[in-house]
Length: 305
Image (cartoon, rainbow, N blue to C red):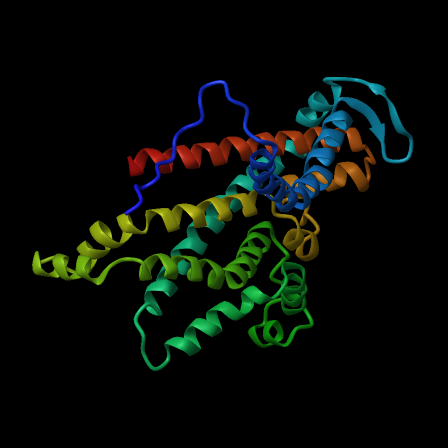
């Protein structure tokens, strides 16, 4: 019987043959080839626009006059001194809190409602999820027609308009967002609920836990990651709200429902025509979003640890 051959390591300092080097480079080149389109997309549509916005934020850049030179930090001071800046910040924060609490609470209730398989489970899941397939602008136009004084439901209820007062305009917009996104967040939470093992609930029942105790001490802790994901998405989307308010209220009545992103639009294209000032406010919004997301991720990580 021939003796078994053993692979010996090449001596130290030995040069690998060219064929072995080419074989090692092929997977690396293939990886770069697969990643190149994504990297190019990020460079063109993310990195370059951010650099351009950064340049505009420190320049006297008008919509029609173009770049008239560096004026840092004048744009940032003008933004903070704008009469609509702090009202827009306050309204955006209020809208974010209200929308997040109502939307996630309703989505969790819907997810628990359709968690168990039954005769009507498929129909209910589809019904709750269907509004998510509609674009936000289309949904806003649909609700704008519903809220108009000529709509049949308002005539039947004897209501002139759902958008006539600041409070009514806020809650009408919140109703639109809840109707549009509740099914989407329900789906995310439903995936988390179905990932919880039934043995955990069985152990809780054997220990004498009731429904409320099971929900509080079993379901919520095990659902923390899914709730955190929904919270981050909801907070980010609410802070960047624009379409629904632009279509439904135009920031009215009396600028009471103007959001921070709508203020960016107004500074750039409506009235002021100041791209430099709008870019400065965009930078502030980006920094605020980064801070909020970092705090949310850090809070989630601390709770999990």
